[in-house]
Length: 96
Image (cartoon, rainbow, N blue to C red; front, side, top):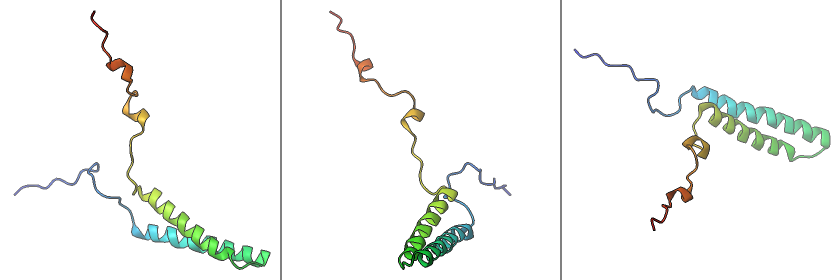
């Protein structure tokens, strides 16, 4: 019988985490900022801030979910790839 090696922690798998955390971020963002918007509506006598609060909370919850689970691909910056390429260094001196 052959032994199966456990998957290495550095293997390239998708983002991992509890999906209930993602659900909680979005729902709590909608609830908190919707409540803030409702309170601002009551205080200022308007009726549109609750909708803005709900939308802002949903966007913030999605942003927190993406940043928490690191679901966006990362691209190396120019400074991480080494020194920038100098086109002047490619020119050879004229041997005349």
